Length: 488
Ligand SMILES: *Cc1c(COP(=O)(O)O)cnc(C)c1O
Image (tube, rainbow, N blue to C red; front, side, top):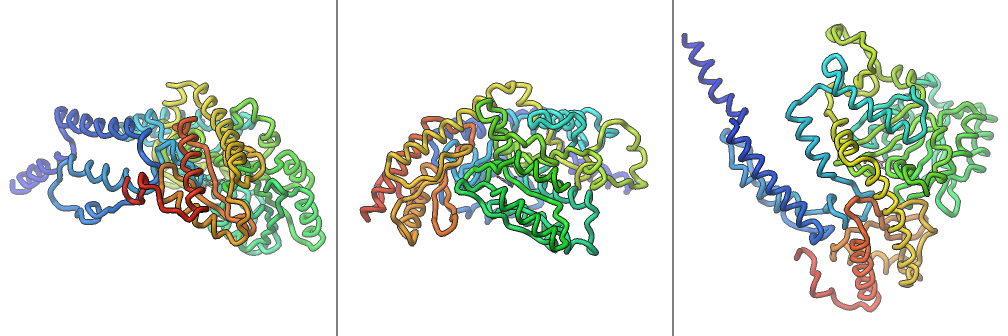
């Protein structure tokens, strides 16, 4: 009887994890009020803010619960108002992300029902949604229908899956890895280096191919290096190209790379994490010619499809290569085998996973593709507008952008001192967040137009901020009284 009493007593406490109807309504109302406040205040909020996170640091997890109000206050003051405002249209540094509100709603629906999206036997519907997204993305790229892939947490894991599939397809192991050669440029994203480490391919021969004046892979140099390597008894097997580099948004010559791949029987992997979705824009399509001939491609819906962070995708043309690299059969999973649908668990390293298909499926169906396409075309035009304006303002600018990243700098600054002071001033100002990069010897400021909340208004705020800070840095004048650091 004592046991029964104890079980009942525990149940009473345990049931606190299941709020009743009234409490659920209150919580949602309170959370939604905060979301409304956040979204409504975005247009006036700075792109970058410094601030303390002391309340957050001091907060301990205890045996007793706290009020939602207290927790949301911390979120509001110390999480959502410090650092880069990545939901804001004023984030134009690095490669900005998205944060579609309709995806947030989808995430709530996905989490509340908590379907198991790893295996079709467990949730045929959730797996079908994920696989439909993969098929739609494959059609965007121009891949054949039998292509398969995996919805991942982002571009890094997606690149890892593709590179591992290539490694396994070519039977690379400890005994032959030192004879295998891989080709990419210095403009490749650093997650490629991570993936090569994780897959043991850092032991292979890694060739950094020079870039041309537009920071695109020099395919003549690529061919020459491959020939040379073959003569030396190496096995060239993998070319890693980028469509939309992080530094400048450059697109490598994809069609020529695909020709070289054909000629030498290699694997052509394409990192289009940021750039890939611009293929949806009619006017930009031609720049992606050859993308559809790649063996694998990575895209980040949390960048140019405006989803919240945690949304990447890898597509692999030869689905058998993908499955061979990821499929395992375990005895305790035997009930789950034998369905037609490909299980996500067999096309990537994860077993249990976030039902991330829903945050893409719901907005695409709700809004249709048109506003996504319009957003992307708008971003391309805004970036060209910015590039032109920066030129007329007297900045040294990079070449006309391939996509939506423009680079510019204060000219006549051989030791980069003026530009160091300039980017520092821009960060202290914070109205719009921009980042910098070093290419060769030169420090460049980058303006990446990616957010679905970046429109003409935000570009003009950026241009005003840039002009004011440039003038101040060059004249050695004081900070504007309106924008003192830490005071937003
Ligand atoms: C963002 C990006 C990555 C890394 O993707 P994550 O989603 O941040 O992991 C890789 N390659 C390119 C070209 C990118 O723009």
